[in-house]
Image (spheres, rainbow, N blue to C red):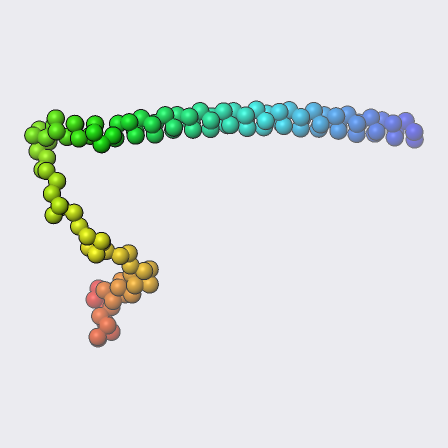
Length: 118
């Protein structure tokens, strides 16, 4: 009976060793993947900062003014005048969701007669 227990114990130890070996490689692969992702994120952030700097450089007001004056006649641009700007009171406020639903219901059903307009 002792030999059987030794054989079972040896098989259990080998099984646990195999499991630990397998988990070790899975963990190493996960760490490599995480490291690669961190490197990619860093490179992407660096590229984004470069693109933002280029965008800011290209959108300098004096550069845009020079481009507009160079291409003024070809683009048929109009000079900016104060009457082209609106006031804050002219901005439409967003409607509430309840108001939109009520408006849609009023359009679908004639409120005075109770009949559908469809």
